[in-house]
Amino acid sequence: MRKVKDGPVSQAPADAPTPGMSKSARMWRRLRDNHPFLIMIFPAVLIVFLFNYLPIYGVLIAFQDFMPGDPIFGEYTQWVGFKNFTRFFTDVQFWPLMKNTFLLCIIGFVIGFPLPIIISLMLNAMKSKRMSKVLQTIFNGPHFISLVVLVGMLTLFFGRYGLVNNIAAHFGGERVSYFLESSAFRPLYILSSNWQDFGWSAIIYIAALSNVDLGQHEAAILDGASRFQRVIHVDLPAIMPMISVMLIMSIGGLMGVGYEKVLLMMTDGNLEVSEIIATYVYKQGLTGVPNQSYATAIGLFNSIINVILLIIANTTSKKFSENSLW
Amino acid sequence: MSVKAATKRAPIRLSAGDKVFYAINTVFLTLMAIIVIYPLYFIVIASISDPDAVLGGQVILYPVQITMAGFKRILQETSIWRGYLNTIIYTGLTVILSLVVTIPAGWGLSRKTIPGKKFWMIYFIIPMFFGGGLIPFYNVMSSLGLINNIWAIVLPSILSVWNLFMTKTFFETSIPDGLVEAAKIDGAGEYRVFTSLVLPLSKAILAVMALYYAIGQWNSYFNAMIFLQDENMYPLQLVLKEILIASESTVGGSGETILEQFRLANQIKYVSVIVSSVPVLLLYPFVQKYFSQGVMIGSLKG
Image 1: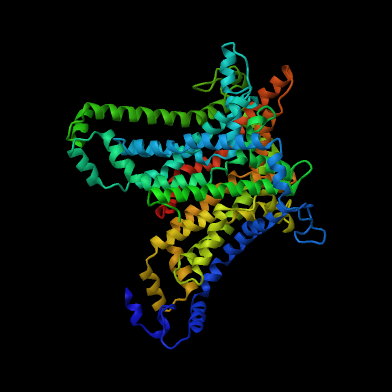
Image 2 (image 1 turned 135 degrees about the horizontal axis):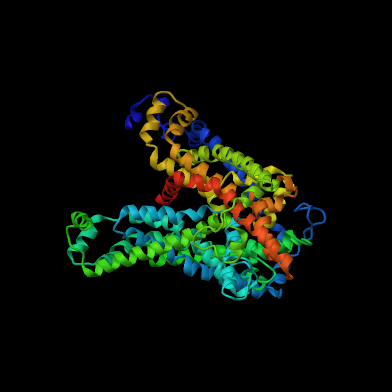
């Protein structure tokens, strides 16, 4: 396979050092031989530039009094420093928004993070492999239901004329629209998210579990370990590295809760708990009388918290184990 | 007979503790399966039952007074079918363009000799963890003239950085270097290697990517909601949003008229959930293997 090295000069790997060539000549040669790769990634580079990097540049309006339609560096641009940020910190909505965002994320995380791990361990420990496969297929299904349909289904089950109320009314109970009740918002949001994605999130652990060394299991059986003990002392340690990576990733994405779903579930009745930072950004920036600079500042604040959380999670994980993203 | 089969498979007799463990395990997972399936099953039986029976709480385990009235009515809902057509167009365009963008880029990035490899990696990783946010994104789309334009739905969806890295990992792990080198000795250029050697060996990743992008576009509503004003351009999910959700949040007042409205509207809701999910659900059993393959490709690198 490595015969290439003995081939004619023109077939040699482009980055092989050729004696007698200057550094820049070698660089040019490498560029010439490998430019097709640059052409192949060009469309992707362009798309990311347009839809990811241009908006990052557009974040500058958070430090301005920006009027929609104006250029970012224009004649009349008014730079206002951190005014939009201090305005948000003193906004009466600030603490409720922080509380709603954090509670929704943290409760969702506390339930949603361990559940797929437990499910994958249980599926892996089933006696019948065929039944385990069938169950996996069932558990993955809801992942493909759209958010609109999922929230639509929630209204069909928990709305005023939904299944729960129909049964309650049948037995003479009062009809209650759970969509208008603040107290029902978080449970409905979190349980439905878990219903939809616990199976899908388990796949990655199931894949890791399928690589566990059978010898370890046999040794544990000889030592008289029960199946449950083997789950705890063989299976769980085997997926620990995967668990730490997923932990870092989900802490980094903690504040990026699915605001698209929150928006769908939001009603006048549950507004006091369903309004989170991301939905507030949407409302401030794109509805009513838009206040784009203010909304951008709030969004930027949210992203920065996210990046800080990610860095903290990664550093901590690096310190206590050898697992980290970078 | 089942005892015999069991002993054949497991020569070591199970301890009492293990028997309990397996029993609890099976019961718990079966319960989870019921929790997953029942809501979907209920939608199906409610859609073909008499609306009064559904409202009366009689439809729980099986359909009551089977009727196809809901399906007949939805045939006349032009907005749904227009949405359907729009979504098919958007999804088709997204899938084609996303493959054209993602697959070559994944191949290029997977090559060690690509100039500036480290720079490009960082270039694509940053957007995974940091973005400008909603408003700057909206302004960019607006300056590109994409408001109320179908390309506002398609273009931002044709590249997901996650999918790009998944493709890159696939190429790194499943196309042997020796094969590429052999093709080059035979005189193939980089483009030729890609089209004649790499692509034919990449059916799995092509399928996974096509499916990921297709499902993503089929199920999305948010970009359409903020960028499209013309209702004739609405994708299916946005039409469904009006039908399924809008009425719940605006419910006020009381009286028989509202109940009557709900009686009719509810059946349409059950039916429209089914009609809109049919393509995805029909595909699901066939493609679920590919989907989980995709997750595993992505997880190889951890």
